[in-house]
Image (tube, rainbow, N blue to C red):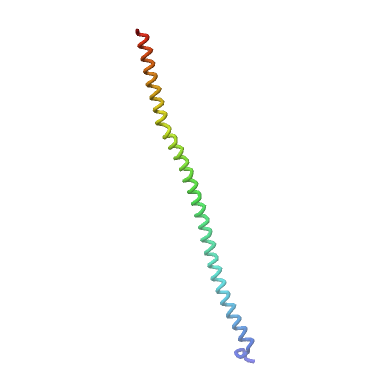
Length: 101
């Protein structure tokens, strides 16, 4: 029996060839999976960094809002201080005028 003409041998050769093709495809798929895993890890790190930056921005906005609230209140405080000073000057002037009479 000749190996070249043996039907089983031909089937075995075909199967071996298909197995080799499957091995090549598996290697390519494993490479693609590795690439996807690497990219996923990088994206997870980037996403974490983005959320950290967003948290920093949120904290900065809170600080700015607090400072803005303080600034908005200052003109009122200054007006009250000016009014208090004017009233004190008027009352003091009145008392001095009364004492000098």
